[in-house]
Image 1: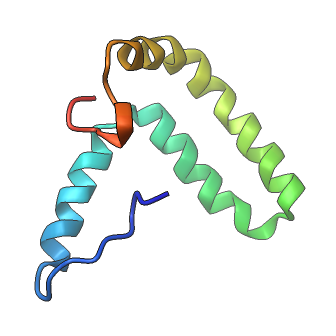
Image 2: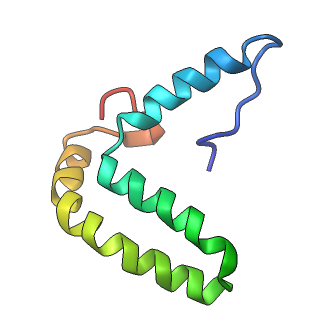
Length: 86
């Protein structure tokens, strides 16, 4: 996906990691929390169960955030992988 993999100059890893953390923190928090919980819970599950669990956990974020997110995207935010102004 390219979200968390970067090649940076020697000695710049922490600085770049902190920039990335600030960028990620700007995303809708209900969605981020659901994704994080899914990542934690999936380790003891087989693939089908993990996918079902993620779907269950993603319903509420979709209800709460999908319209606002789609509206932002339709207005040009997040296009071409740019998250400068989300």
